[in-house]
Image (cartoon, rainbow, N blue to C red):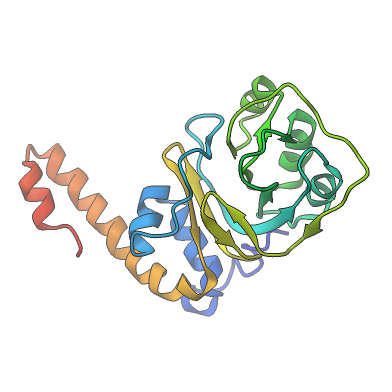
Length: 220
């Protein structure tokens, strides 16, 4: 059962704030998450969507792996809770493979929400055909080896952002945003205001309004 859905039947305020925030993010966007987080938490744009039209939201399941070695990534694929986002850190500037079609197939079957990596991926055509959300630094033809281990569920660094296990990840075509656990309450309230503004802005546009009309209603 998803870590974000275990209280699905409970009424709003009785559910954990992480669950409620994740649910609202699923009806928003990475840009809305960034605005709600006080214009912070954005991962460097070198880590980008490997497909298109996909929104990925969930708590981070973190992996710190040696570049070119995949045993920790394999373990995360098999053990991360459904609903989570696997966040893989192999250190900045490495072009090693961190993900592929086999992992995407297994992760999708297990209900993993997506993968964010500062490394590279291969089997991109298969991943796109699956429609599995992957965000990475690019593609590569090489695979990985066995023999060195890193760690699971430890703080990692991805695109200039430190990610702790359980932080919320929101990613789409525009980029990746990390919301730290101590931000959840404030971000939830700000996200409600942001999504309300976006609905109002859409209505103004459809009614023939001006850009100035929209900006006047924008939250501070």
